[in-house]
Length: 179
Image 1: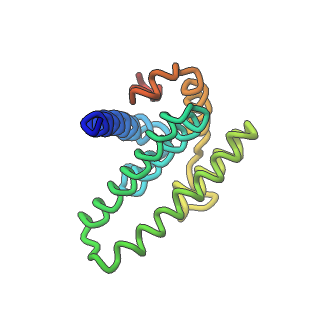
Image 2 (image 1 turned 135 degrees about the horizontal axis):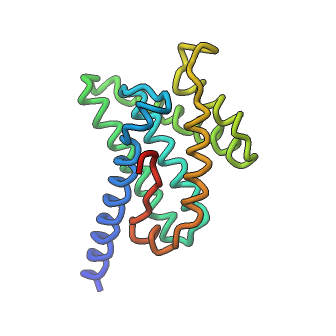
């Protein structure tokens, strides 16, 4: 009985690693940076991974318990990854919690604004939110984010059509541009 628990936990870890790896790989798709005006910077990559996670979590919210458990483990992995990245960038131990709090706030703020636009099927509001978040310093001079907003709507639709088994096994893939 006890050994079955550890086997199940290890299997869940493999599923989480597989799914998080797929989401991370999708966020690194060159077309986002070359064709959709996302800057290829640390923050630009954070923004893209945030978008992937938001889309994935919106799909798993409609899943039975196992999909939601995997999603929680993925968000935990994401914040561990962010913590590790902050430390690699040279931020000392005293500064990490402050930065983590700020990045968590950024993530949840984006979740709220992107979800509101997606729920209302409002492509313009989503493009505006993306522009504000991805190019905050540029204001109105920022490049259009309409292509990224259009992709997000298509990706959400494709995720909704996925079989539940793909979610439960960590095999969910987002259709990224250029594939």
